[in-house]
Length: 180
Image 1 (tube, rainbow, N blue to C red):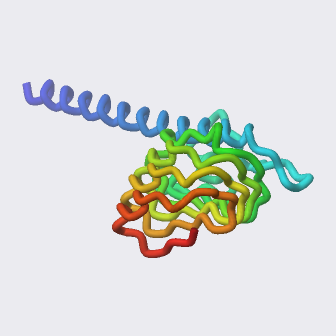
Image 2 (cartoon, rainbow, N blue to C red):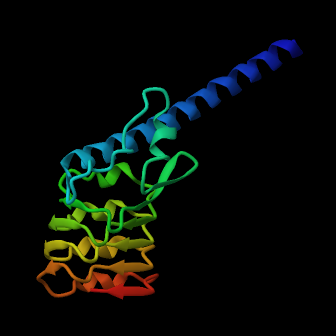
Image 3 (cartoon, rainbow, N blue to C red):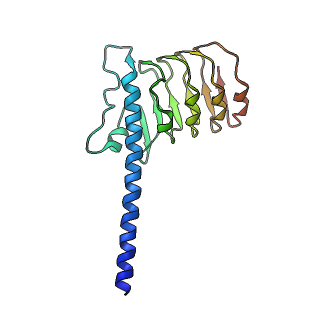
């Protein structure tokens, strides 16, 4: 009887572990596919291929994602993207904010980003650092940026933003550094 209970416990452990690993794998794959969709919408400001390391290995999506240029992981999840001064040109139209729930730092400064900052940026709810300075972003600063309650650094300087500062920025109680 003890043997059956032990086998049942072991089987339950294996099933639970498999489910956890499968979930982690699907999260990493979703992050990789989201970043690849955004990459496909970008143009290069140089004659070089844009983000050549951003490809998926058919054998191990998490490992390849965490080795991409400018992508930093904790565990198997993306927590930082730093493409500062990398020469990317494009919009956030194809950027799937909801696919990167653990992103804490996003630095896309000194590039050729244009268009509006979408309100969906509030889906990066764990963001502590956001630098979109020195691009050609236009339109209004979305009031939803005030929902990024963990934000400590916000740099939007040297863009073509044409509105007043939304009062919702006052909700950023953790904000230590602001340049608009």
